Structures are given as structure tokens and as C-alpha cells.
Length: 127
Length: 130
Image (cartoon, rainbow over all chains, first blue to last red; front, side, top):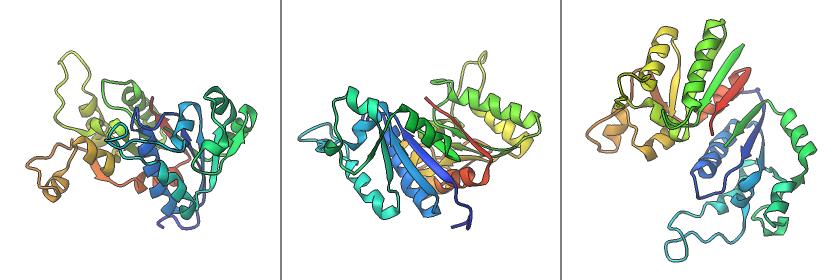
């Protein structure tokens, strides 16, 4: 778009559960808008942020909390060329989650690998 | 150095706005450039002119407006986050059939693309949030 030619490494760090606060939803909105700028995007999910990717979220009025289930949107990210998704190993283990319980394919990183990934970035947005 | 600033929390509720203000002011004083201050999440509430804090306290909103005026600072409020939280400028109020607007002086409402652009254009994007 406006900044033709400049490609930076953008990392979105998601640390909060999906419905208790608006951070997860509004973070996703930044990622989707940002995709139009054709930057090199990665997303990581740490702490309760790993719950954002949990399968079988039931949030409708009848079965849940009366909020929009936006977990399906993560599956659409591929279409926006956002394909580098990472989850924190310890956060997954602490919550008893495995990768096949998540809505999208992810790469698991341990603390050192996570640090390395962050080190490589130009812009880190933490939500 | 060229900085961009992201403010993710509202005034008074959280120190993020205060810290961002102090950082911005200090950076300008040192001769750095602030490309843009972008307000997101509850941070958009930093841009309402209807706050009336106690007289013996700092006025967070006016403080941003004054800093903007003195330094020609670009203060941008995210449109989607602002609509959710009831922050409108004249155009937005008209567009949505509301009978008032509440944007403070020096702030403007625009899209999230302005945040990405700030990240691309600046040497550092500094995030102030929870």
C-alpha cells in the first residue's frame, strides 16, 4: 500500500484469554488490517492467550456467554498470508492443552526459542 | 530517533497513558521525533473532551492536547475502537446519526492502518499497555 518496498518483521504477542477482556479481539483486528500492508507477520500466543485458539468455543446466548465467537477468524488468517503462528510450550502445558485441541496449525516454542523469535523482530505489538 | 507511541489503556484507570505522555514529552525534549501517538483499546478514551477530573489532579486529556499543539504532534484515535466506546468526531457523529461529538482538540479519528504505518515508518514503536 502506501509504504511500498518497506517490509518489516511484525510480531503480535497475545497474552490474554479471548472473552474476559477485549484485547484478543482487537488484536486480531490489527492483524487483519495490517495484512494489507504486506509486512512479514508472526503471531505468538502466551499465558492465557493460548485459549484464544482453543477448539469448540461456545459463546452464543443459548449455550454460553452471549458474545461473538471469533475463534473461526484465526482459520482465515492463512488467506491473509499470516501463517507463522507460535504457541508457548510452558503455557500450553500449564493449561493441559495439546496442539490438536487448537483451531489452527501452530509451532511450539520453548522459552529460549521464544526469546530468539522476539529478538529477530522490528516491531513487537503486545496485547 | 523516530518514535511511534501506542497507548492501550484509558486515562486515570491505568498508568499507561501517564507513562506514554511522560515518555513522549521527554523524547521531544531530547530532540527526538515522534512520528505519531496512536490510541487503541480503552486508550481511545484519552481523546474525549468531556472528562472533568478534580481540579487538584492532572488533566490527562488536556495535557495531550497541549503537547500536540506545542509540538505539532499527531494524535490518532482508532476508529473501530472509538465507535465501540462512544468517541465521535463531527463527521462520525453525523454519519451515525448521533447528536453530539466528543473528540478533544488535537486528536483525530482514523483507521488501524495508521498504527501499522507508524510501525513501518518509525525506528521504534513503543507500546504502553497493561
